[in-house]
Image 1 (cartoon, rainbow, N blue to C red):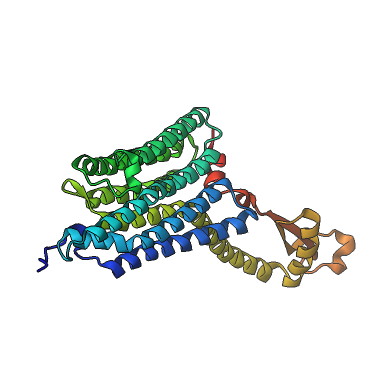
Image 2: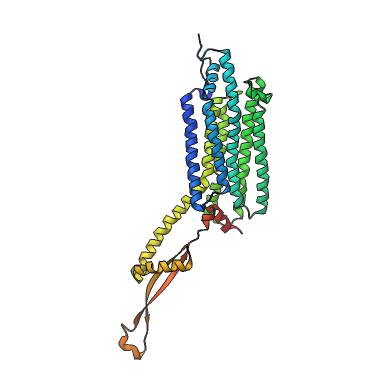
Length: 380
């Protein structure tokens, strides 16, 4: 008779179907943000920038990881229920599923770290364009890149050396007390270097803020954008605390929080371009409201609105794309001498003068992010 024991960790509230829904919902949310980011960037620049390619690569890695996580479900839950005593022990089936699970876990763990580090590379690529005018920060940027590369290599090696020898990954091993301890150490170590790398990356642009001649409001806004990585750090800490149960790793929790952290990284990595387009839209709305009011007052007081339309076409052609014109008719009283008294009206005649004002639109933000434009404006 099979004894039914209580499942531990995330095995208790989550079943096979729920786990599948979680990982695919996370992937779908990340996909929506990445697609929106790429669309915005393409509309802004008519091309993709290096940080966009890193995000695209991270999305491809997450897609592959999600597919592999789906494939491992049968083996994962068989061994989970077997460990809880919910199914009868079958030596042949146990060995087969252990073998399959270790084979799936080997690439899944690597893809997880490659996805997270690709998002870090995207932030590094974005921040490099922001700190080019700061020689010291530019040197530190290279140092952070080296540290990030070594940290990623360390995570991959740590997960590879979990099994002793590593060939046990493909022969159904990795269940000795030492190897179980290595699994826990791997989670703690990789999370630690993950957090350290995020802090270093965020510190680069934040360190440039005191040197900028900007008002406090703009500095706070930039600091918020540059500090988005704190969201990923919080998720990484929660992941570590939820995955490590006692002296073992909860594989169901590892699958859940692996999907959550990669999705969070992709969403956060997609936010800077989206923030730029939202801020630009707000400014356009504010500008249109103010401009409409000013135009109405000018036309009502000084002249006909049709002259505004006629002048706009020719002026735009003369001064190039990105300029708009506004024509106004001003009535001016000019005193006359005695020879022209017969033509005076209330002591003067009224001469209509038409002048055109030109407003230059700064489209430089189309070549980069708003953050880049603010950094350029605020440099000493």
